Structures are given as C-alpha cells and as structure tokens.
Image 1 (cartoon, rainbow, N blue to C red):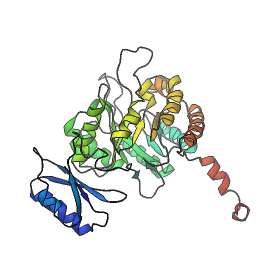
Image 2: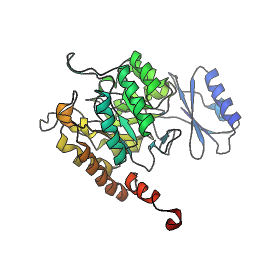
Image 3: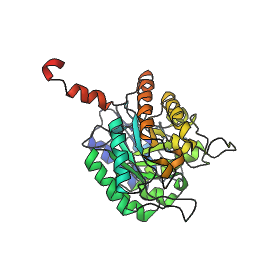
Image 4: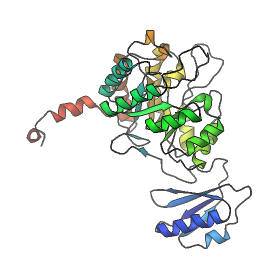
Length: 357
C-alpha cells in the first residue's frame, strides 16, 4: 500500500501518519517527492485497511501498489531519484551524466594514482577500484583489502573524486562503508539477501549490479531488499548477462535501460567493460549506452592493462578513455545530458574576469 500525502501536508502530519502505520505493525517509508511526500508501507502480509489512514490530517489518498517491488516503483515516486554528494558537484541520476572510471582492482599506490590522475583530467567524477575482488579462481588476485581502501581514500583527498568500491560480504561492507562514498554490490552478490539487507542499513549510497542471469523483476526486487531496510540511495547498474554468444564475454542488455526507467525512479548506469569483456567493444557500447538514456557509465581504465592483475583484457588505456569522453560529450548533448569538460573550465578560469564579462 501507498499513502499519498497532500502537497501542503506538514512534517508533523507526515510523522503522525508514519507513527500510525507502525502502530498497525507495519513499516513506514516516507519518500519526499517534488510535489508531495508518499509513504510506502511494507511488512504487510495482507492488504492494509485504508479507512483509518485516509481520515488522517494531511492524507490525500491510500492506494494499492500491485507490483511486488513497492519502494523501487514509480508508483511511490514519479520523478527520478537524484543522488548527490555533499561538498561536490558530483551526482548520479540528474542531467549530468555520471562517469565512474578506474582500474578493476587497486594493485598498488603508483598504479592507482596514475589512473586517477588521467581519469580526473578527462572529466570523470567518480573513481572505481576494487580493494576486494570476488574471483572465479581462489588462486587469482583477491585485492589489497584495507590497504587498498586507504589508497582509495588518498585518491579522494588528492583529486576530489568520489570513491566507488565493492563489498563482498558483511565484514568487508563494514570497512567499505567507512572508506568509500558508494558501496558496490557485485553481480555475484545480487541475490545475497543478507548482504543486501546489511547494505540497506548503511549510510552510504549503494550501487547494485545486475546478476549474470537475472530478470528485470529479480533485479528490481534485489534493489527492494536494500530500500526496505531504509536506504533509499540505490543506483542500478547493467553489466551484461550470460548468453550463448561467444564473440563477447557477456551480452550487454541495453534494452534494460528504458525498461527500468519506465518502471522505477532509481538511476541506472551501464558497465560496458564487464558487459563485453573486450577492450575494443567498450567505446562503441559506451556511446550506445548514452544514446539509449543511461544515467552514467562505469568504465575500467588501466595505465598498463597488459600487465593488470585483474581484467586487463577489458580495460581501456587512458588515451582511449580521453577519446571516449570526447565522444560521449557529443552524444550526451543530443539526448539533453551533460558531461563536464575540465579542459574548457580550465581555459575559462585562466581568462581574466573582465575579459569574460
């Protein structure tokens, strides 16, 4: 069920409605919108009797949500969710296209800083890099752990990039929450429901990657697990699904983007690096993702991918990333999106104020 408050409802009336819902044994999820606040009701095994709620001051109506995902749905919030980060212009879900770039894994300080310097100069607002790596083989590089997280924190301090990195279990999530700006839940953990619940209690945004064989509904239900615990800052990420195709590591499902945007208010990104597993396919699929309406990209960039300890074959070179950013700026403008251009900003700042006026 969904309680829709009137546009002029006061904070006190919203609080009283939430208290009433919880006194009935349910959980209330107030989600402010542009015009009014909607309160999602979860924890009900049967239909909620709307009578007492409809009579409360400030309540406009009580409606039934037929979809299995309640809080993720546009039924509870019509306008798009935009996730912002205090003290920075970076955002995910707004008109500005979010670009997350960096190596698959933090291998050492020199490598991570070399990549961070290049992606920052090219216009990325977020830096990705795994301190913990869930690998198919137990003998593969598993990441640097907390030492890697410390390096990521240094990169944020040096370049102002927001940090996105993966948590693989409850223990690592505690550490990632301490160091990162965005907690990533990888494809292998999309249906690790206890981990999703723990992420739902975190105070940081959560980037949830689609499972390798997940349907659209399963993907949205995984996001619902996070939101049902009270964390409404969820970012979806399409990273390809496993099919019979052998010309690519995964099949990047760009048709998911408009499908998600029709059903959900959450922002959705595209990861063409994992989605293809091939370096030469990353730029073309990035262009397509922007054209189809994705809210951002997650790109693997490495300064020496041939010697990378993880996923070097799908990581692009910094020069290729520079070209990619130039191309997506042009495409973004066509679909009414914007990609910051540090070069232009630096040129303008170097011109005296009197000359600019």
